[in-house]
Length: 207
Image 1: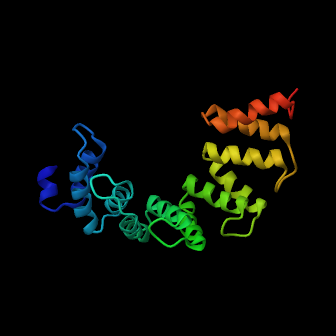
Image 2: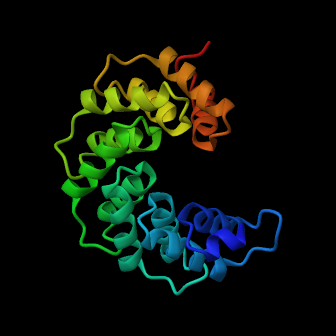
């Protein structure tokens, strides 16, 4: 593998870089992980470009630099790599490495969501539920939460339960809220476990 990577084979470079980064079979070496991923990324391999962006963002193997992280994420996102689209959306949402821009955040969340990425679907739902960068619309939020919840994403299931509990965008339904909270709690989400406890304490939607 090292021989192929050193001869410039991009997929081998990315794989070797990931082995060094993840510490599979060997001791982690983030500097070598960064080096091999960058070599593959410079050849246009989207996964490697994403990995370089991640390493810049996390400061592993290289000095932390959110601006460069965003640049590498953009390269992979332009090739349709959903994780880079999602991470870039978060950066636009938070104004980290790029100027804060909710329209750009929504655009990249949408690109990842259209590929079925549950976290991006949930993030769009949250933007509409909170009215951050878009007009607040609980009905639209529910549609996106449901897409992510159907894939089992516990945060989406929880937030869908909150909307049923509050009666925002849907008819208030404590039993439905409890059912959703119970599902997300079973996945280990502490916020849902807390809300269930409160519902039992106050006798809301339970007997």
